[in-house]
Image 1 (cartoon, rainbow, N blue to C red):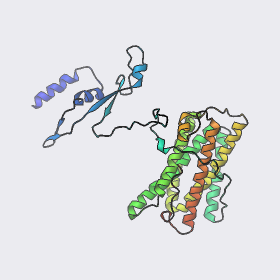
Image 2: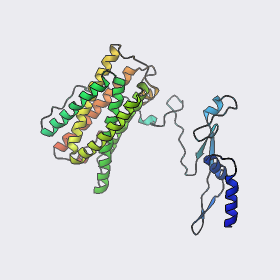
Image 3: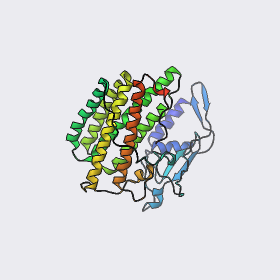
Length: 329
């Protein structure tokens, strides 16, 4: 038996190389029980059904009408339905197909453009003053590096702004598990904030194409800021939330300057990216200015949420004791 298997292996090795995907799918394609050897006998697998779905590139291609994908498969995608997980067919209100996988129609919203942009928390305690001046000190090197390149500046800002919500939500999640208690909705609220900031980044990536050294800077800044904020949140959540509140105030200022440059004609008011139109439910003819307006409104909301969270801690309470501001995003 062993000799036969070795002989077959040597014969297979002499054949022309084919992709591992092609081999696996060719062998498992029949919708029948598949039995594989296991320790101590045979393990019976359920039915494995592999569906083939033609891609749009097949119809649009030239020559033989087929286009190879990343796995070497020409003109088709092999979708595993063994686990019973199938993608839903999602459409817009007008019946057209929903093309985004990073967010769904029920996650879209209209930003509150009436939100007060001028609100400011006046630092009174020593931790508040420390948080305020830490954020202010970070503005100087940012201004020096990006100057008036507000598209790239926004990209850098969003890579940093997406960190606090994820860190806070993660730590509250673990705390909820340790203490066997609810979070009052704050886990969801903070993770929503992180996701919203990430969508800001995905939007501005369509507008500003970062250079290699800017990408390298993002990696360095994100690594340093994540660890610093994680440590700060573990030591003092009220300080961490206050600092994010001030960080969002600076973001509002940056986007206001961005708008001024657009209005003065120093930056071209290009059409809004398609992802922004669908995410914020903007008009079909929306422009970059409309995008900056809704992003600035989001930052004002994050400012309020984080100052509110810090105030809860300053009053001697935990976040779970106050209802989380869920539902904006």
